[in-house]
Image (cartoon, rainbow, N blue to C red; front, side):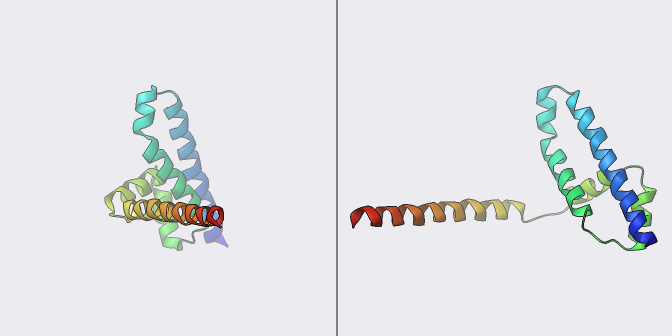
Length: 112
C-alpha cells in the first residue's frame, strides 16, 4: 500500500511538472511553442502511462529523488530508437488500403 501511495505522489509531481511546462509554453511566441509540441505530446503520453504503470518501490524512490522526474523520463525516451515512424508508415498504408477497399465496394455496387 505504501508503494501505491508513493507512486500516486510521483504521478502528482509529474503532473504538476507538466502543468508548469504548459504554463511556460503559453507565455512563449507561437514559433517557439511549435518547436516544443513533440516534447509536450510525449510528456503527456508519459503521464498517461504513469496512470496505469506499476513501478517497484525502488523505481518509485529513485524517481521521487529527482526534482524533475517527468523531464528525466522524457530525456531518456529521446535517447531510444523507436518504431514510431514505422508505425506511422504502416498506419498510412493501412488507411489507404481501407479507402481502396471501400472504393472498390462502392464501385462494385454501382456496376451491378
